[in-house]
Image (tube, rainbow over all chains, first blue to last red; front, side, top):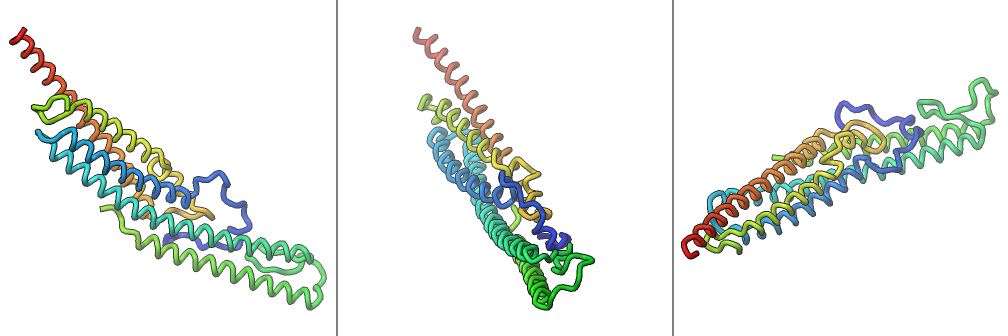
Length: 171
Length: 96
C-alpha cells in the first residue's frame, strides 16, 4: 500500500490465508472507528456533566476547553479511522475475491493434470509429454485468468493507497 | 451541589473523573491504540500505510490526555473537599 511495498503476486494468493482469529488491519480500524465514535459521544456528555459540577473557579474554563478540544480530536479521529477502515475492508474483500479466483484456477488446472508455476504460469508437469492441443489451450486460458487476477490485485493496491493517502493526518 | 458557595461539587467531579478514565481505558483497549503489531498485519500482508501509524499515535495521545484531565478533576475535587472541611470546622467552632 506504500510506494515501496512489493506488489502482490500469484504466490501471495496461494499461501496460507490470513489468520481467522482476527487482528488484521481492516478489523483493527473498524473497531477503532466504532471506539472513537463512542468515546467522542461519551466525552461530550462528560464535558457537560463537569460543567454542571464545576460552574466557576480557577482552572474551570481551562479544563472545559481541554475537554472540548478532546471531543473535537476524537471526532476527527473517528472520521479518519472510518476512512481507513473503509479502505482496508474494501481491500480485504477485493483481495479475497482475487484469492478465490486464483484457487479455482489452480484446482481446475490440477483436475486435468496441469501444474501452476511459481510465477502463475499454467502448464504440463515438468518432463511430461506435450499435452493435446485442447489441454494446452486450457493451460493458456488458465494462465490468462491468473494474470488478470493478479493485475486486478495490483489495481486494488493502487486504489487503496490513494484512499489512504487522502486520509488527513492528525493536527 | 455539596458546597454551593464555591459553585463546585467535589463528589460530582470525582464521579465525572472516574467516567473519563473509564472512557480512556475503553479507547486504550482497542487494538489500534494499544497493539502496534496489529498495524503491521493488513490482510494479505504488506506494511501499514504511514497515516495509520499517525492516527494510532494520536489515539494513544488522546488516551494519555484524558487520564491527565481526570487527574486535574480529582485534584481539584480533593482541594475543594479540604476547603469544605476547614470551613465546616471553623463554622462549628464559631457556633459550637
